[in-house]
Image (tube, helix red, strand yellow):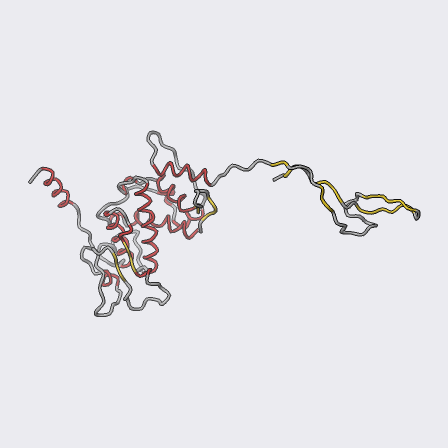
Length: 289
């Protein structure tokens, strides 16, 4: 065996196995299936819960399929699977000792929403050039939240803020990976990471966004995106424009005896002088904004 092969073999032997290896997902989560239904297993890249008994009618078929192939990084697919099983089966022997794990089983609908947001974040990290979760820092988490906070049009201009629920979900997936850090076997966030100063996802969703600290040396991709996002949401105010004078018609809105503006036209005739309100004026030549 070549030295390279021996090294790869040793690295593979040292990699810890997932505590959910070979697990029947429905059995672990206490979900009932018909006797002849296919049962999703942990190693499957798609978990199909279509036949689970007792799911609400309004839960669409798309929400009953958990597709992990949407996550580009193979290691992070394992991380996502371990997190979802932990949420569905909080009494599992590998989950119960975790001090910050959820104690109530998550509904399949809740787990699907968490997986969708986790997929967005992990693929966003891939686009930023992040190769390991241990490279994620506080600035990266802040840039992610800005990315999810503002809705942008096709040109990249901010057109509004997304709902607090969206911002909360974006923060929650990061916090979940910290709360279940010891459970993950393929990759994990670094110990001591405190995104958003340790605030809860609900608090992060409503508070103002701080500007992350700048770093010297080579800029990471997410730092460039962070500066671009802030400039996109703070457009330069337009300059005041000037227009030529325009004559405008002012219809009388009060009686001839009590003109509205006080400006009058005096007409004289054999019967005497008659006072009438002015029926025209000039608009201002400057459009003030």
